[in-house]
Image (cartoon, rainbow, N blue to C red):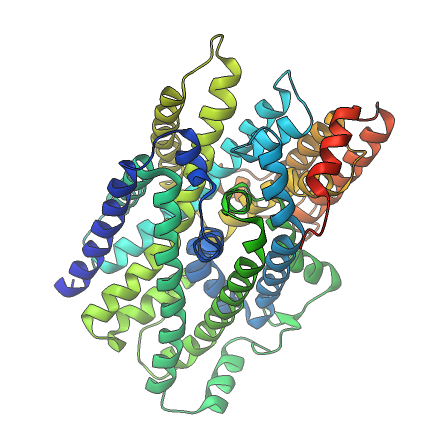
Length: 513
């Protein structure tokens, strides 16, 4: 346990907690707490969206998968890069305009409710439940990643349970205090820190490896057959179904609440173009760099720079801990991994707590709840949701990759098609939106349990109920079935009211990109 590493790490924690305290004093109402008062500049918006998107999955789950199976896993990254760009291009500006015109909607749930004039609050209720279920699993993945990181940093001298509690406590602390502005501004710093880390680490590894590029490639291919061939995965050719499943990850962006609220929060819809460019560049560099790190790691181990991996998802952590960097630099790089974890978990906790306060509590209350009380309900919901996620994180055999893939599929399936259609199809009505969300969410859950061997739910709850392993990622059928349900139910039921159609025309007039 190196004291300088601990010092750098602790200073980072002090910084994010200070940010939470700073914005606590500047959070005046619920709109400030859950949406930053729609005052985010394009650079904060872009890096906050991408940093909150990638999570510990970027620096732990993905490089671990590539290390084990080869560069064929990069198709996930390719799908994500394309999906991210298209979401910025197609959804961001229209959602920013439409959410403000729809009664200044502060959450995705409230946007859907206002967009479809759901006076009975059914959409709010369904969306709130979906958000709580899938974000609990998403936050769990962050706590697992944070726990693994702490165990390595402290040289195994800290228990995994204690490590998870510390991770949760810090994330709860600044999210509880500062809300959206604290989360967004810390995400800006965290996004920059993550980018620096994924550039510095492979460059340093390349300098330490004795052989050149050719030897690195040869060693990687010797360890995993066809490692450098992106048309192979785990030594076997990638079939059409597997390729489509990997690329389907990109569909998730259209339904991810913690990313969609970033689009809603940008101060000027015309600045979306700048944010799109910044965000896309960040994503491409980050995804490409972690793939290179995973490949270099095989040569790094072969030359004795570090020992064999006991957990492939810790590949970047083990590289940093190998002695390659001075202690203070290693501490900063460890902080970058924690930044990846925290930048997603904080956003997810905030959106989930907003669903409790703005969608569920307000829905069931007989009397109108003041904004001050809603803000405190949201804060305490952060704690409650984090405690549930923490309990799940302490389960055995939790895989960061599996947890993230399930949560990502759940949101993409439930909200993705509904979001796109709500912005581009005037004929979609309330019944169609409800059908799309319910069908998408249920498809993701059922597919993960019964039609996908080793799914996140099966692992988390020790289930073995798979009937047939389709090999198809649940997001793809979830999105497709949701889209079908939206179209069929909307066409079989009454047209939207004239007022709803007029709002659609007003909100979507002009260019959307």
